[in-house]
Amino acid sequence: GTSDELTQRGWKTFFRNAPPNSDEAVFAANYMVNVKKYQRIAVLSDHSSYATGLAQSVKKAVQDQKGNLVADDFINAGTQDYSAVLTKLKSKNPDVLFFSGYYTDGGLIRAQMKQLGMDTVFIGGDANQNAAFAKIAGNAAQGAMIVNVPAPENLPYPEAKKFLTDYTQAFGSAPPSIYTFTNADGLRAVFAAIEATKSADTAKLIPWLHDMKQPFPGLTGPFTWDDKGERIGSPMSAFEVQADGSYKTVYPTN
Image (cartoon, rainbow, N blue to C red):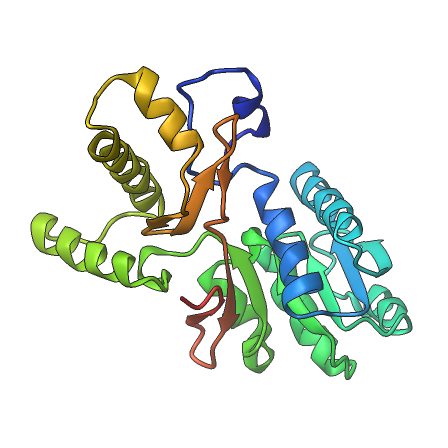
């Protein structure tokens, strides 16, 4: 992600297509509250500045979206045994637990939730996306959820799959990250603006890009931009960890 404040500086020619730092929290809250309709949400963090910041943003976004936050707690990263805090959380009977910390703890938390008989869905923030998560969690890894920007091969959109194939054929290797796709989306939208306005004059292109009548069919999903140049339409995804440790995109799906 990038700093939220970049679109707050009044730059008329600035259009952001990568997610701001707050986007993960808004996306995760929307997924929990509106998509899955979980009735009892718990948030767990460690004491690092990153994890506490994400947890605070998730809690605010859940409350903004009228979700029911039933528990909010911390772990000391690296402790290894999280049964005490998990037992306390279990007593609150949450449907879902969002963990904002890192995979080294997240994998253990997921495994110990299973050992304690917690049916609670585990959703990890982006710092849980690491191949070692599944190794640490063991058999408990399957079914765990992670929220992050997807790897190029996990983008569910037909346009993205074609771009991935074309890029690999042209350059002999796959794009290094989703940001190749967000950059391409910005350029493709500018080309669409030039075609629609029959002009390369920024005085004509900027209003068109701000006021697109239909969401642009991006490689990273449909999007528009608001009057500050902030992308509307998140490129984030929710993944489910599979038995072999791979990821399946479960939202959005097309």
